[in-house]
Image (tube, rainbow, N blue to C red):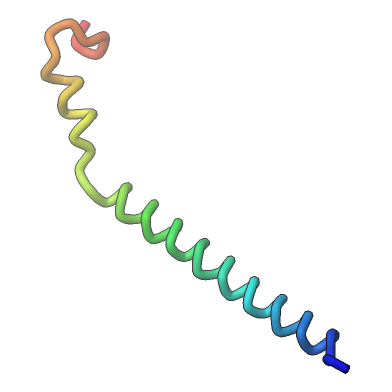
Length: 54
């Protein structure tokens, strides 16, 4: 008979590892986004009808 308790804990550990990997990937993406220059903000300043220019 399979050891369901062991299988469950192995599955739970692998799911926790996957969640940790996804959280790290999200944090890395957010850090990269915040460190790079924001081209959109620069384009808003160049638009003649932008609300920021008024």
